[in-house]
Image (tube, rainbow, N blue to C red; front, side):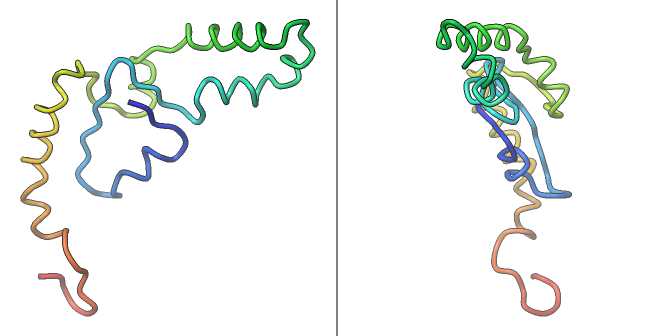
Length: 115
C-alpha cells in the first residue's frame, strides 16, 4: 500500500521469485508527498504570505499528478489489483514459491552445498 525510498528494493531477493502487485491506492516513491513538498519547496513555502495554505496547495498539485498506472510502469509492478483480490494473489504466489523454499529457506551450510 505504501512504499517509500529503498523499502521496496529491500523486500526483494536478487534473482529470487518476485510477484509485484499493487492496489490502485498505492503510494510509491522516494518520499511521501507531505515530506517531499516540505523538502523540495521549503523556501517557496517560507516566502508565501500564508505558508500553510501554500504547502497544502503544492501537496494538492502533486497528488493530482499521481497515477497508479504511471507508478506501476515506473516501478515494475506487474498488476494493479482490487484490494479484495489480495488474498488470492498471495495464495498464488505462495504456491509458486513453495517448491523454491525447500532449497532456499533454512540455515546456510558453512561448507559445501546446502541440503
